Image (tube, one colour):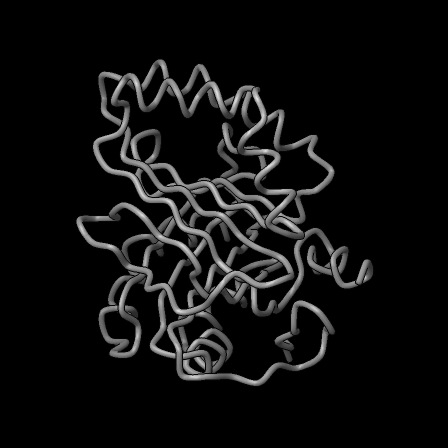
Length: 250
């Protein structure tokens, strides 16, 4: 049975009636499992249409731990829930999540509460700021719809950014996923604190240069940036909980 761990103590958490976002990533190793997961990009939609307490969801695939690459083994479910208890219970017990875990060799879920949001996703702002920034791990999510005329410029920049974040020792967890290959891209990363996140974002390097180019060249038709407080985790990734690095340090 999976356990929901508090980000600081590793113990089971309490829950509260505030909006909670979950990101669940799954790794499918066999060809048969990968074909099944690909088909779920269409079939699993019905499950979420029937979930009344899920206000927003996205099924994502072809993700990788390097933002600029596709990994056909990795798929993800991002969902927004009315409260923390619903998020915990549904990601543990709902048929769709149990089905995905049964086919996957590994899965990992992060529980999040938004502290900062700007922009739109599919024409709306899906995350509601429900928490203030606090000590502890933070997550950053960026989502963009790239203008077709800017695709070549965007993807020329992406490998360099991926290399920089991949070698950053502060990053606890990172994943790149997408709704539509090439056009709709999502990056997600977890950092031990606000300072380490800010140092990466602000220092002059590939990431900062890319941000300036995006603004100057109007590369995105739609974009969203969100920052979250990480309130818990469940499962493992690459054999362990990536947040254990943070817990061991405090």
